[in-house]
Image (cartoon, one colour):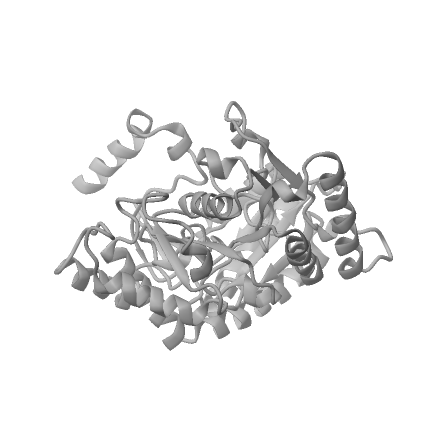
Length: 437
């Protein structure tokens, strides 16, 4: 072992002395020294295929040369804003380029640093513009861990333990196809159910005239990669329009090509009033945005919201480079093609392995739900064992779902067929070994 490896190992062994457990104890806590393309390079000298994209962040792959060069060029001129005190080309050019790929009426931006900040901004904007106090979210969705974002997050109860916000929010059920009754069409069943649920909520708990916004993940992310019917999202839009409620899409995980379109709003053909975007926007640098129309944003005067680091010039340069890579390398097409191929292989595995309960996905946002082969119940323990066995063989997946029972497969959009096969061959090898034991 080299001196450098020894130093690294000492740091890793002392991690509990430096980092809060809430930061340092996530799966799998893999010590790495480098990342490139679809791979991490571990402290142990091994190469790991990354099917997490840094939790849906590295959509153009780790350290894409175009992005790295943009970062270097930007650092030669400007490291920090703050936007508003000064103004600079990268933030204005990025806004212009985002306008071209977003739904047409979403054309004005408040740049921040993280997904949770984008959610906070979206809720604040909705409340400010409507002068209404309440927010409706959907059960099982995740919107972040800051106290405002947490008030509308219900993917896991542990996130809210001892952290209950001081203001009321209301929840409606998410459209999970698993709970559609037999012989019912989900495209008909869930919109009708939503209409009834919303009517009950408005009749018994909160007057719709006091609801500022509804916020929803168009595909449930951390809550299990649940894909709702398009008609259900259209019904949400209809209910919001009927009552003057603003619709917020949380596109933090679904954005920037993850679903095979620039945004899930285009995948489902539903345009929200406000959108929160982050994660894949800047190829790993901290950047996010609350997006709305000029009409809405113009009602939010100077000082009503602010930021010191939001819209950092280097992050904006990285974001512009990332957008260029997605276009030049046709990564939306690749996401669709590779996602379709991966889903085909995974569905074949579902027929062969009793621990696979469900396979679902759009583009390269794919979830494999794991169950106890005997009881049929969601099984987070088995999922964790499978994840660890895959890691031992060189591929990194990541869990989601209320008990960690869903294995998510979210490789960079640059992933090749050979890399899909490499990862899924290992996944199938692990399933075979697991079921034999």
